[in-house]
Length: 145
Image (cartoon, rainbow, N blue to C red; front, side):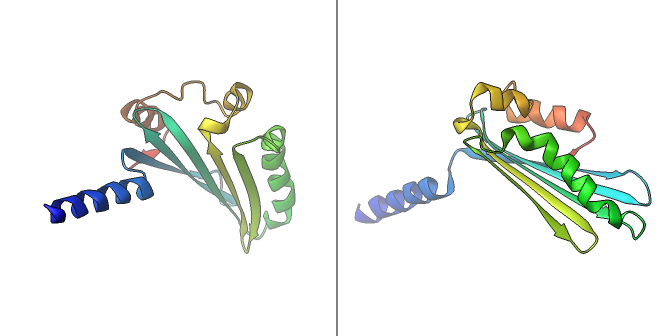
């Protein structure tokens, strides 16, 4: 009897610590705009009971020798696109230079966002199911796993 209690307590603790009941959809897309610029984009969407709770977007932009001099301009362009979300509760984003380009990361805790922030991130339907979101990403050229 005690053994069953301890196993149950362990499973319950593990669920609380790891987020039992949540699913993560990871989708990626490679955009090879030209020989000069390539971009890999990965979006991780966390669902709990068919509701989006978290979103993480990573972009890895690679520039060849000719375009590396435009890195700061390209970075500024992406940062400008998200600048209106700079001090928004529930959103963090950053850019980081790499040897051959830069990386951009945005993390959003959907439960902390107001409607305006959700609209700016194009998150009009956060109660979309895992399967519906996967189909939508795949229709936009992403590969999901």
